[in-house]
Amino acid sequence: MSVHARPVSSDPALADLLDSDERERSTRRGNPPRYITAHALLRTVVADLTGQAPHELRFDRRCMTCGSTAHGKPVVRGHPSLHVSLSYAGSLALVGVSAAGEVGVDVEEAADADYDGFDTTTLAAEEVDAFGVVAAYRLPLARAQVWARKEAVLKATGHGLVVDPREVVVSGPDQDAALVDWRGEHPVGTAVHLRDVPLSVDGYAAAVAVLCDEPVSLEVVEG
Picture: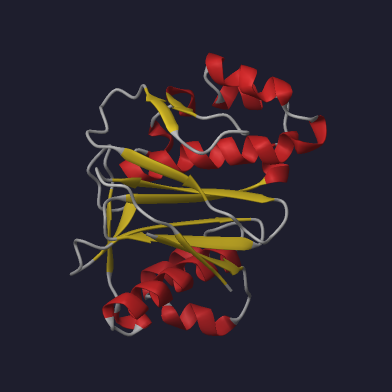
């Protein structure tokens, strides 16, 4: 699997890579450049893998919860074995790609996880103790890392935040990334390989999850 990171850009040429539906959706976002950069990056990465032009690619949507095709995970039309995921936060956009199984990628800005109610809204009871040894100055980034791990798993399964993040128990911030327990109503049904994504940009944490039975390697591409 690979994860590709790119700074958010306001370059109008990026919008030319998107289809009309994506361009229309971008106008309804609070920060259109983030949406456009992430989707342009997705098209560029998939184009390199398939040999198609970025603007010629077609994506379908599939919601694992309600079955709707109006929203949900992006699926590359005509390439069922190529699994993709995208995320954006602050000034950074990420795309994850895997041929091994369903993939979920998430990036979080540390400042967004720095609030008093984080523990009660995000962590299972046994996860709270892991933060007791984290120094105060590291707490926002540690929270962002654990949050990114949970989101990556939920994106890989396709459930998103329909599943309470407290039901997705992951390893502590000073441990290697791992899914410790899945307490969602529907079982995942396969192994979950969870990895932190090392980034050269300060103030961000990211993770990627792949649903497959065999171990996978991770390549990170920034730029």
